Length: 97
Image (cartoon, rainbow, N blue to C red):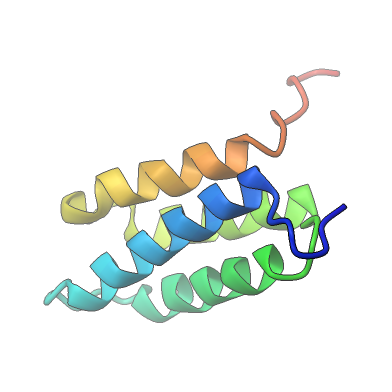
């Protein structure tokens, strides 16, 4: 039951997203897709607050965030934490199956 009892995966995802949002906000450099990353991080935050998130939507957000900030080495650890938290919701289907 999710009423009042936060699901551990959601808590880990929420914490990882929060960390990446903080580090992104503190990052002084500008890059073209920063707004995309910020929007998708906000979407992930919202999804974790509404119960069981849709795994395909989690993965889509992760891909957009990774594409937007993946080249910013200062954000690599926080991005990896988000990726690991999303992976806790299940592995993607094997290729060719």
